Amino acid sequence: MPRNPFKTHRNKTLSYGKRVEALYEKVEQMLKRPLRFTTKRSVEAFIFLILFFAFFGLLAWKMTLPKMLNTFMQTSYHLLLETVFYIMAICVLMGAISKLLIEFGVVRLLENILKPLMKPLYNLPGVAALGALMTFMSDNPAIITLAHDRNFNRYFKKYQLVSLTNFGTAFGMGLVVIAFMTGLGYGKGALIGLVGAVVGSIVSTRIMQRMTLKAYPELDAPVDEADTGDEQQISFKSEGGVFLRFLNSLLDGGKDGVGIGLAIIPGVLCISTLVMMLTFGPSGENGEYMGVAYEGVPVITWLANKINIVFEWLFGFKSGALISFPMTALGAVGAAIGLVPRFISEGIIDNNAIAVFTAIGMCWSGFLSTHAAMLDSLGYRKLIGKAITAHAIGGLFAGIAAHWLYVLLALIF
Image (cartoon, rainbow, N blue to C red; front, side):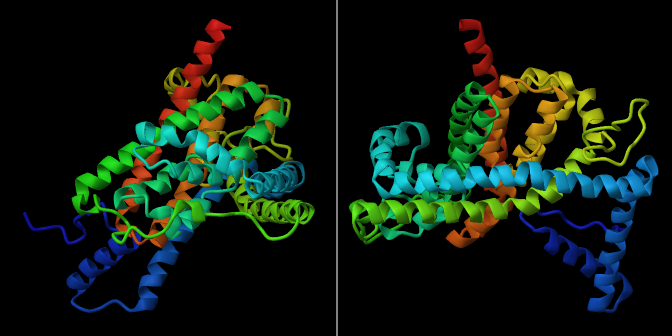
């Protein structure tokens, strides 16, 4: 049988772009002439337009075009006013508090308390606790700033340093997520979720280390062969008197919080709007579309309900619509928590769901959008696939652990 020229050998390490180029090369071999750049772009544009109009065309067919457009804009508008600004306010306040805790040594004190747990739980040196605290107080990229500090990374072996992307990401925006959930009246679930996130971080970090060493045994070597640098030189203390340090920390932390709040706007308005339009149905009494916010075609809910027995056993979800949160957290946890107020208004949420949301939200916290950049900055782009796989597994374990811990505590108390 002649070989199919369109069948390309799939290498899992190849990116989407490289696989497309390989396909183009096969086509060029068939045509016996090179394809022009504009031709390649036209093909990609044609495929994109088909998918784009198919997606929105089906929504418009079900909802009618005017109501679909109005719902799309109204949902984004309501999310901006009712959710984004609320999250931004939390980010500003938590940013200020975090900066104060860092400035006056509370974070370093907590680091010393947590140090003994790092080696047995994560196979990481004790100083790694500082990385977890920094990402918990702010966001995922904070771990990379530390990883480039010679006073910090000298304590790590290369495979351990790489696993910091999984370790740090598991706690990204943790303080904001917990504050948000607690502010909605679900503090108990949020604290249980924090424990679940710890479980997920252990699983993710350990799997990443094992996969890295198996593929690249040479990474079992110290990062700094010269053994230079000193942990004691890692200082976040600024210059000036106590009052000036207090005031600067308050303002600088709030400013950082504004940055985080602004950064989540595209995710909340774009991702959450699309997810909501695929999660919730019409709001009319007779199943009619009104063109108001939070309507849509509940495809995700319909599919999740078909296998909801799985999600109910793993996470305790009573409604298939709740699976939208973990799906959204893959891209941006800020967008994911933007779904929670709507779930509350629908009456489908409880402390168990909040525990699972907090665990998965912290552990995944948009890792699909940050892992690649973080590993690239460390110079280990070849490990992106392994890091994403390990962290996906860790996030699932975080949600499962949070659910069953909640069940156990409910039985005891």
